[in-house]
Image: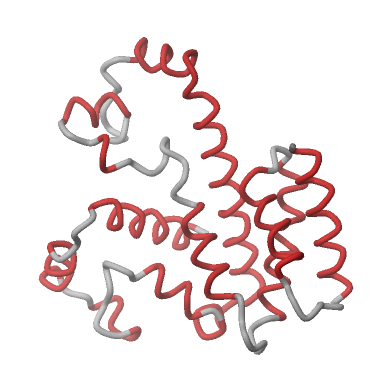
Length: 208
């Protein structure tokens, strides 16, 4: 239940701010990630995101370090909202693109149909996707604020997630990445959803 998520994440956050970390971090990580994924109240979700960013900060030099897995999970959650991240398996024609409203300069061709979908059960999954995206975006924003210019040095997994497909030849050459290089990278992707998710995560991070 949401009450269980709220209470357990609050306790986990309190432990983080006490800086008294147990040998096993799982009892702290699981409630915080559950809040990032399912907490309905934005204020409470923000508190969990703050604690999660603090935990990641303290775990930079910890061995074994949970940060890589945490960052990967956070980035995955940013792509859970179908209203923001197109689902490749549903994009089979221009009509489906129009129907989902994926192009900002086009108007969905079947608004009535979309409303029916919401009324027949898709509202729950859409709400869950929105909550997960909101929580993960909060976590990423707070990580950016926490680490500042050292973000990619201290949390290199985030850079890996940003450049999983659209990967420049080196960090320094990001601005000079050629169109040919990007084309080759895109054509090598076997699962189009991977490319879509990569673009979504990059868009979120560069907008923070």
